[in-house]
Length: 395
Image 1: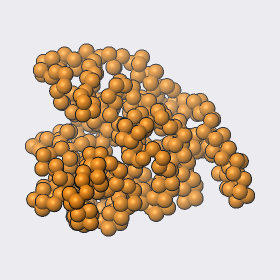
Image 2 (image 1 turned 180 degrees about the horizontal axis):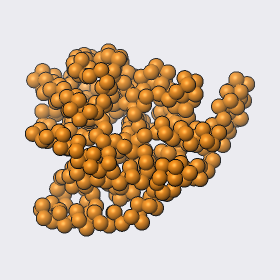
Image 3 (image 1 turned 30 degrees about the horizontal axis):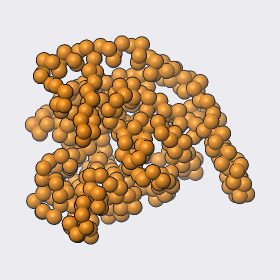
Image 4 (image 1 turned 60 degrees about the vertical axis):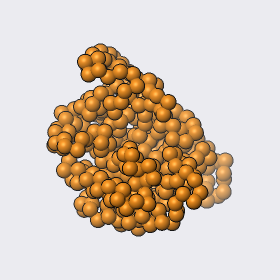
């Protein structure tokens, strides 16, 4: 069973976010780090380092406007990624930053603004074709802050129209992932507030549209593994944005608050794979902003945690679990899960990493490499040269 558990790790490729390596903060300000990425090349270099140490992070999610300028040669960016040993992964649209989006993007009552949002999205889809990315990811800040501000049903129909147009532009190999979020920055209603709304919009858009589950985009009491189980059963789960949260969208490292929840999510995926005879085509992506933790270390920590919990979930004795479930033996059924969760899999993970030609402990290997100290010195000097000061933005 342990050999089988190791084999399942090959199904867990984790995409890193370019923005997770740059300085980030809250609306109150930023705490800058000397080693934070200054530009896209830095982000790819850091992601390449994580991949070399973990052997499971071959792609990097990019954010249009942050990683690509309007007049930039797209092949140049792809070449920079390739040089760092990674590939461009999902293309993330930016439909919240421009001033025109104050009242929304796809849901905006102004048809001109909706057209601007659609044009940007279509450009992102074309960008994906140009750099050979098959993932187009959409998150919307759209919503309203006061009752009566806009028609909720009209906004739903505007979204349907926009997403259909995006779906029509996809190549046969491209998948459109639609994310949801219960609140923020809209606090009266959010246009795509939960998985059901995303599901309905994806079904309406077409077969290449799937739901993206961000593990931080839920209320504290929400049963995320139930959402995952339902979407798996409906063949509508497109991917994850991995993070953790104490309150809502806190963007904390995976498993830092509730590792058992992540284990339970992975358990549903392993269970589905066993029933179907193969693992579903799910994209596993990190979406985190490390405001205080060292960025590369935090990313490695998240990846190691994901692998740890993935292997533990693969060790669940499903035959025994089914037996106890059919008998209504609740305590025994729960203990099957707890036994797997409490299993120490450090040696298994070390064996898998050695088989991939990497060190057994990626975090320890990173600290010994001297990479963090090196980039901190180099980038601090570059910032001084560029005149970048505290409070400045270079994400």
